[in-house]
Image (tube, rainbow, N blue to C red; front, side, top):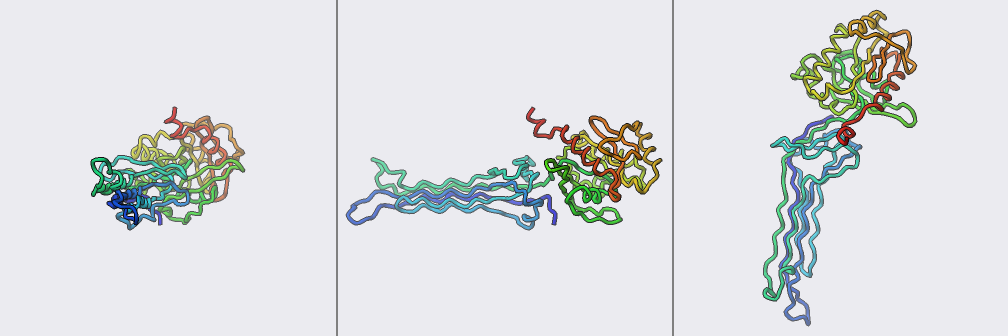
Length: 356
């Protein structure tokens, strides 16, 4: 089950109490204080883990708590520290304060570990309070209380290329043909009801991650269809690939303009992402329909690159491309892979932009 939004309360552990104790041994009259310190409470730690791609393991849980520290003991024995609570989340998970909406953590890379809440400090035993004026201290510190926080965990998938298109545009067929993803494919709309990730292999040394989200319809930014719920999963993609269904009853130019408008209405930042266009299902339409798309977009086709079939008009420049393809008949799929790979190499990700 795919879960991308969870609300729960987390608590760090309470520190253990310090011990009040006095040394009592044979031949050691009036032994001094020897109460040990309490152990530290467990931290709440968030760990980024590639081995999970959903938040479903948190579903149904309301409160998660780290272990308390153990109290100190006599003979200056230190209490055991409480066990940390480790929340394993997939890359792309954002942790927010549920009350203020403030972003507390943004987990992006496998193996990344960050402390969300620190455990309470353990109390000092009475051994620390001995002195010339206080030779018999009969008190010790209590352990410090742990902290608690109500959080929202929100998953935004991290991919290099995000597929955007109307329902039944062939996005699932395309990602299954290009990558190792195995989405459900059927001849009806909204076959894809959860996002899918696939790794597209270019050669022995190069590959990229592609994301497929449920089809977008007009008004998705206002809650129509499934698009609004899942548009966040392409917010972090470097490139948007618009998949236009040439065989659909919807006009191809209308599809492209509507998709661009929905992305802009959802996120101004998302609408400025570099993009390319794949004109899908060319095996099911006449060549004139492809030519008409170019004419109405006021784009003059130029030389086809990357071994693309010259029977169909193409357009390539330094920033983008328009490529007719067929995911079913596997026409121009290799050209699409190589064009996307080169486009990605020329596209800076958010981390690089922020470091400039």
